[in-house]
Length: 51
Image (tube, rainbow, N blue to C red):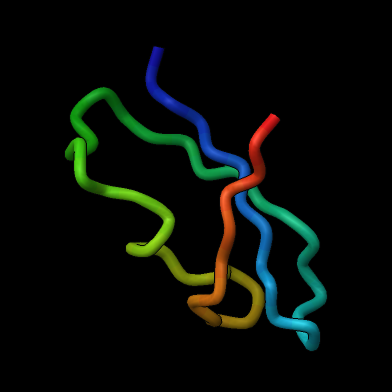
């Protein structure tokens, strides 16, 4: 099953508390949260939520 990553935006002005990123089977091994931006505010200050 492809990986799913839960991510939170650390920008205090952002209205989004968290979002999920669903990957396909062909995602590169070196692709991660540093390659993403927040879908609400566009910020890059993101952190993976570890369950």
